[in-house]
Amino acid sequence: MSAMTNRPAATTIISVTEDVALSLHDLSLETLRREFGLLFDRAALALQKTGLDHDDVVFERRLVCRRGDQTCDVPADWLADRDRLIQCVRSAFPDASNLPPADTDVRIEALRVDVVVDRLA
Image (cartoon, rainbow, N blue to C red; front, top):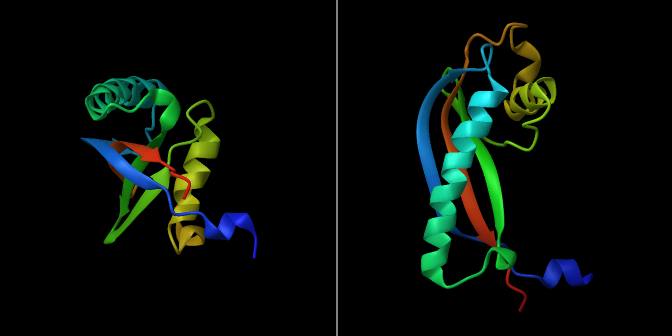
């Protein structure tokens, strides 16, 4: 058994969310960067209150996406590459191959920054 399997799971200690109404079709990376910047600021302020340092945690960007009655929580790792981010969102849905080319029915409902700590046992 490797050492990695004995490590405890990472724990989200702070989660800051902003409701939005964005179409995947009209996705603007500039808007996402600006909104995530504001969320990072709020998360950093909350982190200060815990006594932990920024070096003790990882900040993770997440998109809460909806298509019909399906909701997916998608990592927002590609804020420099619109096509790659869209592909990441599309692949998060179980029936991604059925998405129309324009992605007009995929909505981003919320942006979230999770502050995660991975404590070693």
